[in-house]
Image (cartoon, rainbow, N blue to C red; front, side, top):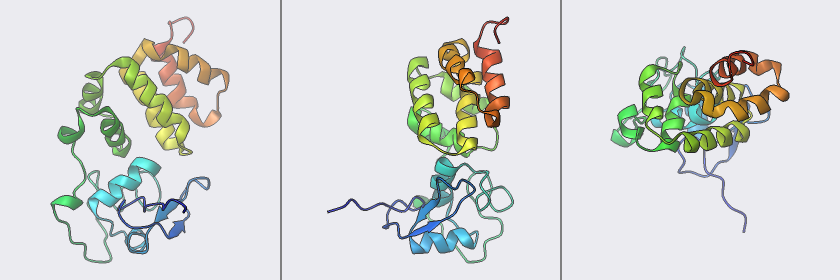
Length: 191
């Protein structure tokens, strides 16, 4: 028996719709109900959050014309019932768990000081491992860029080896976040 893929948004129902996203190699994988809510800008905050973690909140159907930073829908075309279970996580709720904190960081429009400070409370090597693994497992430039921002703003010199590696195989798409990471992690003459 094959394994069932769950809907990326609700993470409860079986996935049965593949909807194109801005990243052709990584489309949305949704159940019928969440697909309908995605197309009518009516996702529940937790559904928006789950999608934003995987695809970044800068994707067309998720971005700030339609949703606030905590997943509240601005232009919903259908009424959405939001109970306590449908709310998106808060920084307070995720700050002690590194994986959840990285998820949270991806859903922010900008990497702000409160999130940077929360990340700095974690072990540097664990952050580096988690950031690298997240960087390589996504196709989304915005998610990759956020991981580079974390390398720059949280890890500094402890990310130097990885930043050098990325510079060797540099992709123009990441020039700006990579240059930022290089400036903060490499010695001045090299950065």
